Length: 282
Image (tube, rainbow, N blue to C red; front, side, top):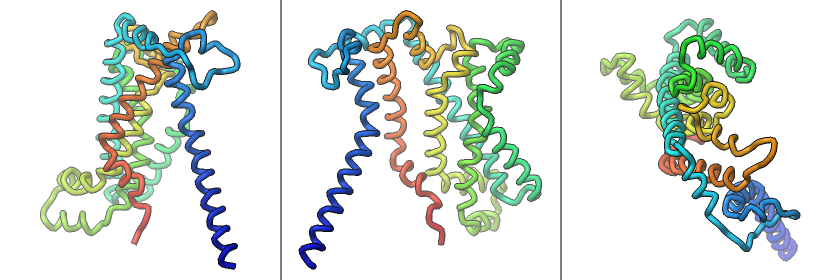
């Protein structure tokens, strides 16, 4: 029985590690293929069957992407738009979520607002693309960063509010009551007590908001033409009905991953806490 038990443990461990390895391969392979495609020569990218481990490597695709006319402007557009959107959605969304999480509003009003925010979140952005474009054009905001920031904030707020709502609801009420006893106003309680405690959740929210605005393509392609063009729109320019410039597309796609990974690595210590925040209640 002892031997059979050890064999079962060994087989279970082997099966577990094999499953983990398979999942990791499935997750990592798209990233690996993106990077490999970016450093292949054009002939190898069109080869069939596909070449998984290339023998010839080149960095010409990165040089071509970086030497594109006004490449720095497009990078600046994406970075500025993503950071401004993340900052505004986190600030406005946190305040709205705090107001909805507490009892400052009537219960029916709170429930109605929460339901309405959820309904707005359900709507696919493509359903409002044409009327939104007409509104932006009539306001004279076409091809501007402000139009993108306004759009991303309006569509990102429901997600941020719903995400932060759970974090604020899980905070102990006694902490805020102690701040009230100390004479803190509602703004002081929010800014100096509640928000620092919810910082892990706010960090997770900021990462998701940054990724969503960084990768957004639909409204960036509709509302911009040149001056406010972002990187996802630039990538689409490498595709046409006559060719697909796989190398340059993959090179720019690989470079676009770097800011997101850097932002996530910078906030890693808060990321793990935020993902498990409120998971266990006493």
